[in-house]
Image 1 (cartoon, rainbow, N blue to C red):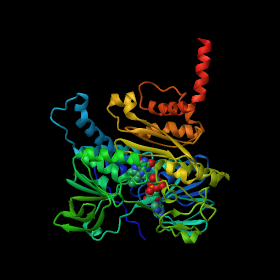
Image 2 (image 1 turned 60 degrees about the vertical axis):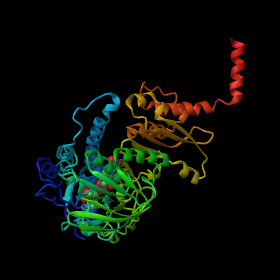
Image 3 (image 1 turned 180 degrees about the horizontal axis):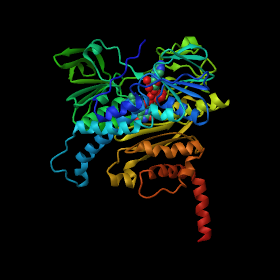
Length: 507
Ligand SMILES: Cc1cc2nc3c(=O)[nH]c(=O)nc-3n(C[C@H](O)[C@H](O)[C@H](O)COP(=O)(O)OP(=O)(O)OC[C@H]3O[C@@H](n4cnc5c(N)ncnc54)[C@H](O)[C@@H]3O)c2cc1C
C-alpha cells in the first residue's frame, strides 16, 4: 500500500521550517553502501535514537523514513500537544487566579491562532535536532521513501537495495478510528490533523477517554470549545488507578467538559456543516452535534507495506512485531523498538527500547526489555503519573500488597499553591518496604514520579525515602511523608513499650 504524505498546515514560516528539516524537498538518497551494520526503518524517536547511537559508535548505518522525520512525538504527539497544554494551563490559571486573590480585570480570552503559532514555532525549532541534514552530518545514510523487506537481510527503498547484518523496525503506530457507520464520510480529526487546525472548533466531540482524549479534551475546553467526551467504557482512563481517574474526571467536569461514559455511538450523520453523533447511553438516546470530531480511541502498529513475511518476521495486527525479551524478532538479525513492538506506547520507552536494541544487536548484549522500570504520565491538570505495578496487578501475580497514601490536602506546598486535588499512593510488598509501584496525582506528577522510579531502579526501599531530605515546602514532600507513614508501621506496640521503659530509665 502506498503511503500518502501527511498534510502539514498552514504552510507558514514555521511549518516550512519544520518541513525543510523533517521532509526536505529534493533530498537525494545516497548510493547505498555494499552492506550496513544497521538498517533502521522509521525515523521517529526509536529509529532516530537507534541510528544516532549506532553511528556514534562507528557502525555503518542507514535510516529510512517514508514521511516526516521525528515521527509522532515531534510532529503529531508529545511536542505539539504539550505546547497546547501549556497554553491551556495558563488560561485556567488566569481564570482561577481569583481564588488566590488575583483579579484578571476583563476576563480571559484565548487567542487560538496565537497558541497554535507558538506551538508551530517550538516544533520547528525542535525539528532541527531530528532533521535529515543533522543525521547526515552524524554519518548516517538517510534514505527518503518507504522501506520494504525483500529478503532476510535486505530492504528496498525507492528502487535501491540495502543489505544489512542487523536491521531495526521502528515504524511506530497510527491512530485507529472505531468502525462507526458514517464517521469516515462525516470526517474526523486524529492526532495527525488536529495540530493543523487554525480555527477553534466551537463544539468538539472527543471519541475515547484515554490519555490523548483526556489531555486534548481539557485543553480545547480551556481554549473555549464546548467539549463532549464519549467513552464506551463505564469510566475514563480505564487503565489507571481508579481513585486517580476519578480525580481527573472531577477536574475535567469542573473545567466544563461533558463526559458521557458507557456510550454507544450508533452512527454519525452529516447535517449541513454539523456532524451529528447518534448515541445511546445511560440516560437514553441522544444526538450530539459537533463542528469537529476528534478520535483518541486507540493506536495500531504501523506494519503495512513492510513485507515482513519476506524477512521471516512474525507479527500480530494488534500487538505489532513479535519480539523476545531481547527485542529480537523471529528473524534473529532483525530487532524492533518503539510503538511498533511495545505495549508501552511512549516516547521515553521508544528511546529506552532503542538503547536496548543497540546493545543487543551490535554487541551481543543480553539486556532484557522486561527489566525496564517504566513510568508514564497523562498530562491533564492535575497530571496522573504511574510507575511499576498497580495493586490489583501485584495481587494477580500472587504478591501481598500494602498501600500507603498521602493526600495533597495535607502537604503544605500543595495547600500554598492551591493544588490540593491529588495524592501520592505507593504500593509495597506486605511486611517489607520493597517498592512495587506508585501512582501520583498532582499538578506536576510527571516530575514527581521520577523520585519513585529512581528509588525502584536503585532498589531503594520506601523506608529509606523517608531519610532523604526534601526542601521545604515542596509537593515532593508528599513522597517523604509516605516514607514516614511506612516507618511508623515499624513501631509495633511492643517496640513502643520497650522505648517507654528505656526513656523512663534514662530520665
Ligand atoms: C497526541 C499524542 C500525544 C502523545 N504524548 C506523549 C507524551 O506526552 N509522552 C510520551 O512519552 N509519549 C507521547 N505520545 C506517544 C509518542 O508519540 C510515541 O510513543 C512515540 O512517538 C513512538 O515513537 P516510535 O519511534 O516508536 O514511532 P513513531 O514516532 O510513530 O515513528 C515511526 C516512524 O516510522 C515511519 N515509518 C512507518 N512505516 C515506514 C516504512 N515502511 N518505511 C519508512 N518509514 C516508515 C513513520 O513515518 C514515522 O515517522 C503521544 C502520542 C500522541 C498521538
